[in-house]
Amino acid sequence: MSIHPPFRAPLALLAGLALATLAACSSDDDKAVDVAVIGDPGAPFVTAGRLPFAAELVRAATVEGLVALDEEGRVVPAVADRWIVTDDGMSYIFRLRDGTWPDGSPITGETARAALVQAIGALRGRAFGDDLAAIEEVRAMAGRVVEIRLSQQSPDLLQLLAQPELGLAWRGRGAGPMQLARKKGVATLSPIPPEDRGLPQQADWQERRRKLRLVALPAQQAIDRFNTGEVDFVLGGQFQDFPRLDASGVARGALRFDPVSGLFGLAIEHRDGFFDLPENREALAMAIDRDGIATALGVGGWLQTTRIVNPGSGDDNGSVGERWQGRSQADRRAEAAARVARWKAAHKLTPLRIALPAGPGADALFRRLSADYTAIGLEVQRVRLAAEADLRLVDSVARYARIGWYLNQLSCQVAPAACNPAADRLAIQARSEPDPAKRNDLYAQAEAQLTMANGYIPFGAPIRWSVVSGNATGFMVNRRALHPLMPMAMRPK
Image 1: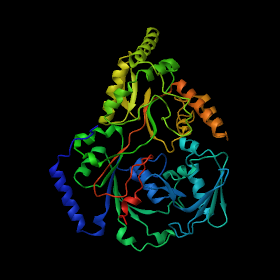
Image 2: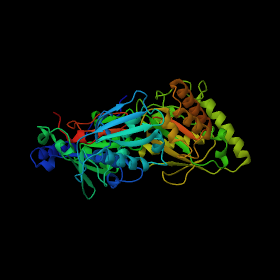
Image 3: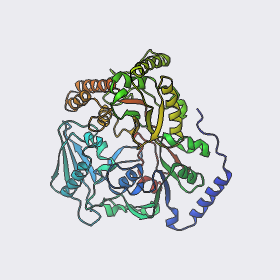
Image 4: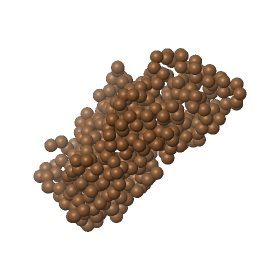
C-alpha cells in the first residue's frame, strides 16, 4: 500500500542541501543533531507528574536508571554495569559502576537505593505504580551493590527499571549519559565523556560525539522544519497528525512506524443514565466499524481488535478471542440500534460527548465515530480531550507486552468508570500465582470480566511514527517507541 506520494518540493530540498553544506564547514556547535518532538514547547523541561514524550526523552538522556533502553528497545547497563537474577526469580542484584554523581559524591549502594525508592514512591497511585507492585524491598548491600527483592516473580522488571520515570536522581540531578543546557525553548544535550561516568576511556570519543538540540513543536511546524532540512528527526508522531505527512509531501522513505502494542480506544467516563447499563455500553462497542477506522486513518497494516488486550501479548493463553465472531457489522448495528431505541423510548438522551485531541487524524476518526453512532440512533458531540465527556480517547503504548499492563491501566484505582472490581481481584490473584498455567488462566478470566463490563471500547493498537532524514544515524524502530537520544548524538564507529 502506498502511503505517501513522491516528494515534490525542490525549493525545500535546495534549502536543506544549503543548510547541510553550511553545517559541514561551521563550528562544532553548528554540527549538532537537531531533533523536533511533537508537543508543547515547554514539554522537554517538565520534571514532575506524568511526563510528556519530550520530557521522557530528556529524562532518559540525563537521569539514567539502574538499566536503560538502547535504540532497539533492549535493556542495557546504565548506573548498574551488571546484574544477576536468582534462580527463583525473586531477587535482582545489581553491581553499580565505579562512578560519581554530578555533585562529585560517589555512586554507592546507599545513594542508588535512596534514589530508586524516591522514584518508585513518586509513582504511587498511578498505573505504573501498580506495574511495580511486585517490588517488596530495595536493599543497599556492601559497597556498590543494590538488591531488589520481590513478593512475586516479575519477568518484565528490567524493562520497567529502564523506563525514564525510574531514572536515579541524586540531590536533584542524574548521572547522564548526557548533560542538559536550556536556552529558551531549546534543550541542548551534550554526551558526557565515558571516563567522567566511571567507564573506560574511548580513544575516538572527541571525533564521534556531537551535541544534540531538541525542541518541542506543534506537529505541522515540526514537519515543515524537517522538509526544509532544519531538523534531522521528528519524533512522537501519533494518529491525529499522520495525515499531515501526505499533505506536506514528506518523502515515503523518511517515515518510520514503531511496532507498538497498547490501548487505543474509548473509555467510559461515568456510569450515569444510559451508561449505567452494561448492555448499553456494549451497544457503543458493537456499533464501531473498525475497518472503517482503518480506512479513515489511512495507516496500512494497522492492527485492529475488539479485545482489550492486543493479540499476541505475553501471558495470553488464547482463551479470550475477538468479540461477536460470526456476526456481521450490519447485524451488530441492528442489535445496538434496538438497545438505543428501547432506552430512548423511556428516557431523554442528550448528545454523546466524545473527547478527542486536535488534528486531522482525529477529525477523520470523529467523522467515522459520528457515522457509526448516528447509524444506531445516537447524536454525538466532539469536545476537547481535557473537557468533561462521556467517552474519552485512550492512546497509550504498553511499557511491557503482557496482560497485566492492560489490567493495571484499566484498574478501579486508575479508571474507576471503565473498570470492573472482579477483574481487579482476579488480576491481584494472578500476580501472586506461582504456577504459569494457572496465572495465565486467571489473567484470561480477568480480561473476560473487564470485557463484559464494557467500560473500554478498543479500536486496535496505538499508532506511533517518526520521520528520519537520510543521513541521520542512531535511530531504530522498537516496540516501546521510546528513542534514546545518546545514539543519535554519536557518529557511527
